[in-house]
Amino acid sequence: MSSPRHFLDLDLLQTDELRRILDMGHGYKHPAVAPEAGARPLAGKTLAMVFEKPSTRTRVSFELAMRQLGGDVVVLSAADSQMGRGEPVADTARVLSRYVDAIMMRTTEKAKLDEMAAYASVPVINGLTDLSHPCQIMADLMTLEEYKGGLASQVVAWSGDSNNVATSWIHAAVRFGFELRVASPETLQPADKLVEWARGAGGRVSVVNDPQAAVRGADCVVTDTWVSMGVEASVNRHNMLAPYRVDERLMAEAKPDAIFMHCLPAKRGEEVSAGVIDGPQSVVWDEAENRLHAQKGILAWCLA
Ligand code: CP
Ligand code: NVA
Image (cartoon, rainbow, N blue to C red; front, side, top):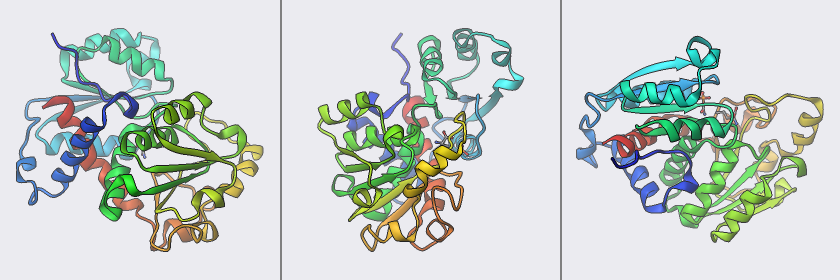
């Protein structure tokens, strides 16, 4: 039996595979352009969604993606499943594999996702861990392409906490060849190992302290919450990140036609000003919509 096609992290997939998934996403969004994408390729298939952290977008967009492609879903939250009482992930993986055709998991430690993938006999999709959020970045890449065209010529600036979303941006920069400048306070910068991997793989990824330097001349400015799920909020953290807030002044350093992205949920007045996220350069609603289309691409790639 061949091993299932997991979607675990962007660094684990080749560029041509990611390209195919993105193209399918664009095709599903515009069925008139790519009519073959309008079919219901997942008829008879079921996705289990396992949530150990809250979600709005991931939950709704995966459920609708599955249904619109002809399939079905089952949702489990840790709190009301036996996982919450300590049933091993490995056992859950083997049981779910007897019922469903794919598993999407949102969890804390990456090790749990890896355990799910190791023991499942069906594809496992990473719906976010403490370390990465690849489905989000597939939607972000779709959005970047819609607004700016070819990815390789783009300059993307990240300003804020180098969290799970930033990690998947780093993976994507390597796979698609765009320049990524990450600005974070010293203690919240990406792990050395990750940056070394990116550079070793030929990625144009830089890490700086100065948000202005990162954003200067960028085509796209991205940020995310200062307090990710599972992270403790503190005055110190807030003060450290305050200079990285994407406000009108910082945004003015980017190209005049630069776009602003945020995976959401956002806190206006913390990582982004209301003027920027609700302003003319913000594409966050398209970005959120594209979760649906990009994940259809992911599901079709894993399952069809
Ligand atoms: N961006 C994102 O993953 O949102 P949710 O936490 O609402 O799923
Ligand atoms: N970095 C955020 C992303 C939420 C979608 C978190 O992990 O909470």
